[in-house]
Length: 207
Image (cartoon, rainbow, N blue to C red; front, side):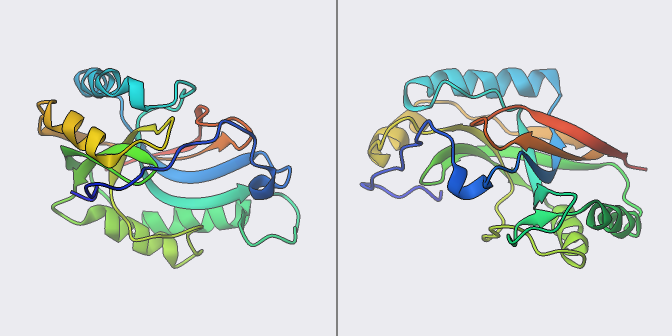
C-alpha cells in the first residue's frame, strides 16, 4: 500500500495548463489498452464506489502506461519534452528486437498516489520492465518517476484526508483478475483536455 494514513491528498485543478503544454497539443505515450469486458465492468464498479472523491470530467479509457514519450512535434522547439517521428520509428525497431509473445498481467489491490486512485498491476515475468528498458535506449522518459504498473481510476476532486480513502478501500472487496496482453499501443491525448480520450496512433500486435 502506497497511501499513508493521516495525510492530505492533492486536489486536481480543472483548468488548462499552458505552463506545461506551451500551446502544443498531442502528448504521446506507449500503453496497454484495457478492453476485456469483465475487467472494464469491474473497474467501472470501483469508480462508482469512489465517485464522490473523484473529478467527474474523466473520459480517458482504462489503460496501463508503459512509457511517457512527450509532445509529438514536427519541428525543433526550445523545450526538452518533445518527441519526434524519428524517435517513434526507433522505438518500433527497438521493441521488435524483443520478439514479444502475448503475455499475462494480474490486477490486484486498490491503492492511491497523492493525486489519483489506482489499481496495482503485478508483472511476474518483468516483461513491462524489459519493454521500458528497450524504449529507454532510444529516448529518456518524460517526468520519469519510479515505475509502478497500474490502472488509474480517477483524479481527486478535493484535498481529501487519506484516512477517508483508506476506509473506503477497506469497504470494497477487491478481486484478482488476469489481464491478457496481445498488443502494445502508441498513442496520444489532447493536452488541453483534462483526462481526455486516448487516440491510438500505432498498434503493435504481439506474436
